Length: 165
Length: 178
Image 1 (cartoon, rainbow over the protein chains, first blue to last red):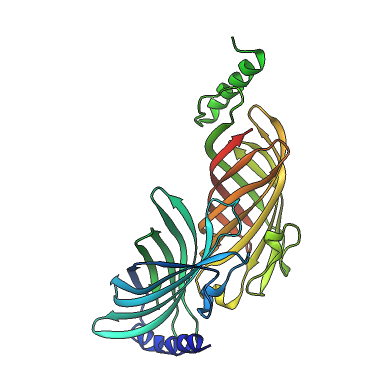
Image 2: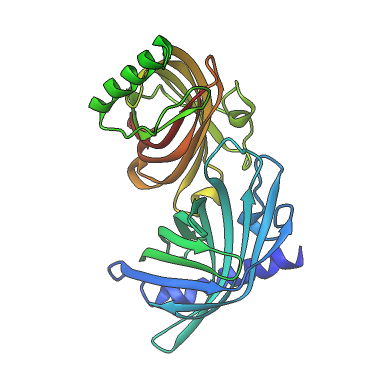
């Protein structure tokens, strides 16, 4: 509950970020969140969007101190529930919440991002593909786009491309 | 000296080459795996409230705001040819839409003509990440039951537009004949 309240507070702060682009044409963005992962059994809990686990058999991937580079700089934490309950599928559904502190042109804000994708085997690592969006809130701008990334035992890297308006 | 069965099997495999897929060396008692692409095209029915029935994969609705879309008699072409019925649970939950994309839980069942085995019945499941205009930004498929023990799995791209009725899927992966 505490974490969810923290997330809601964080969502409110998105307004400042969006204010810089409100009324203007959509801002194209591309940024990457990367860091060292830790894995635990079961779905992530108290993490909002990342709590989703359709099959009931999931693992929770966490990046506690991720680094953000690209259109924004900053840091963030990532919670990803990987649904491993359907072994017949080549790739696994993934629901992700990213709490990010984003800095652009000396303005720093905290945003909550929801990401949806699949995690597929790709040689020595696994690859993410999917989409992302800013959690909606009245009076605030929106943002969404596509995501790609990789996941290995030592590093998670997720790149988000899209627009904020 | 190989028997007639093996010769026939190799001949069928060679015939499949016209489909431009590469087959590994075949041998008695060993499965034959083909890498290739299946195209599935069809038109969706109007959405019905709630998740689809049928396989458990499409019965659940993690966010509680789902619709069910059917694609009866979709056409299969490529590595195999045939017809398939699709049932798709589209999860439109509030949290899901914030991701800019929507998860789709899909089951399929149909008949397909495949090299060597002929007409078979197959069923399985798929998961898609559906984004703007129905474009898929990720997905996976797998065969769960088969009349001939066929196994298959891979990734999905293409379009699944439940609003405008257009379904054009490209399934890339492998099929393994028993």
